[in-house]
Length: 317
Image (tube, rainbow, N blue to C red):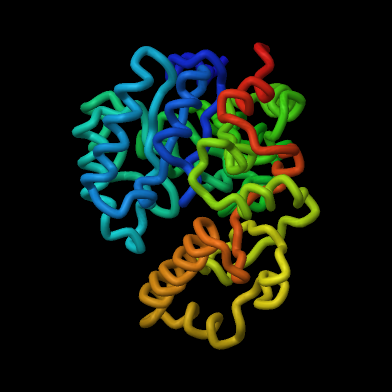
């Protein structure tokens, strides 16, 4: 038997409130941790290191003795802030780091001496074996029902595949929006789950009321995959604006993305422009509504406090 997420992080329930770009904030993390689960925030949600450090200090101070706090780091070259963000995580002695979109080798090496757990986003067995060989503590199995940058394999296939071929715990990301989903995913052999989309429409979330209301009004059939936002397939709500601009890169964008000489810079520019578009839509009223979310918004029927969302999800299993 592999170690449960509850034992790895010392939490009451085997759940991480997933790090959501532009959405997760200190208030949400505090409420999640105090409700008995772990919570992670993207380092990129903070413009300056001072803001990042202040947020981590606030969460630690207001969750003493409960929950577990983590940070999501984008570890590829599109994030030049990564080394500084990693140092802040080490200085603040956070409990765990989730790595995305690149090699976690430097992060794992830096965290081991400090006892900070490193969980790595993976979408297939090949990459899972790679990060396991580098010393990752657990796998975040990003499946085809995840919000944001989703994988291609459904959880019913991905979780058993990784469990059978890897020795470290598998944490499933995607497809959990209620207690039945949680029980089903744990029944497949997951050590725990990472859950994001159902927390977007929380009272503590800082996004616009329009964004929250969209998560209530739209459902799983309104989620589409777009490559126009970050260059990498990303799930968004199929608003009239998304329908207007389309979900696939045009021929010129595809051509630039394939150029060996320009590929790196095109990817960075596409990512920056896409993130700015998401930011504008997340915090203000605009007809250019590009809202990132996963199919589990099907379970969002009203705007609620984080602690109530957690309670509905775990129902004191």
